Image 1: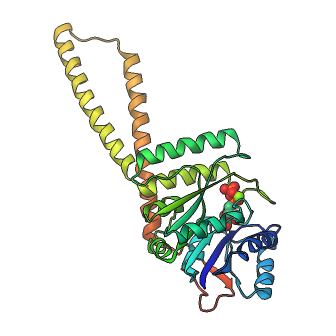
Image 2: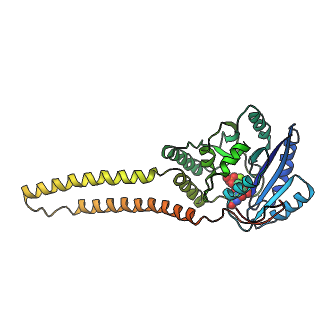
Image 3: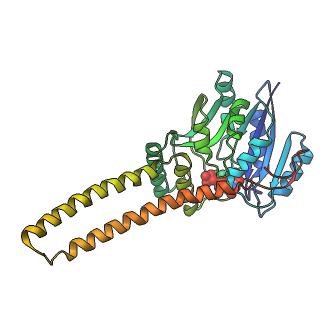
Length: 315
Ligand code: UDP
Ligand code: MG
């Protein structure tokens, strides 16, 4: 019997957890040769998520939970789940049933084919606003051009991974985690399983537009230093141009004498250069902030309560 841990990060999912368990268990019970257990992560929910987890874990010996001391974000939830998992395989799933349990048998057969990872990708983004879809497309194009890892567009966090791959992911100890990039960075053979986007069963999405923008910037800066190279090159090009321009002005002054007009061109240049300098300092600042946060080496999450033995504390 192979063991599989299903990791479910939850933030205010009280209305959905029981339904999630029911629907998922219906599917996994039909898969022979694998024993499934659940590890719910309560990411500082303000609703009854924790008491529902306590109840479920008291009723079912294969259900466990970890409860954080506050909201640390989905990335921290997934990381806590991965570091506390012990199964031969791990599945990461959302609690809102947007990740259809029906894909699990396909994940299992991909794993049996010899893949280390089977991951879901959306064929449609129905239920998502046009602008959000458009911007996310733009992010993937930009990020794939910028970074060494290729993030497959439409990939979601829903996936099944071998112990080998999970260990590789846990060995990446960065504090600020961008799982989409980490999954791609560790490598291993991944089989992509397409599925149609489904709307949330209950509750609302926890993502704000501002949150998504921050996620995108963090994602790019976590995996490449190319923006730093870009501004260095921009600086070199500007320097060369300004030398040439200075030479032209110098010769013109020698030939024509002092020329007073030129206000417009000076203002334009000033604004242009000011803009570029601000932008560049901003990019450098972004990296400095990451260095700062990594250097502090704070724990990714803090556990307040769990039914797992021997894992109180933090990571
Ligand atoms: N989630 C979490 N911590 C957070 C935000 C979300 O654990 O701070 C969980 C949430 O409960 C859900 C999953 O991450 O199980 C995906 O969140 P959501 O459905 O809000 O994101 P979307 O599907 O809109 O991308
Ligand atoms: Mg969702």
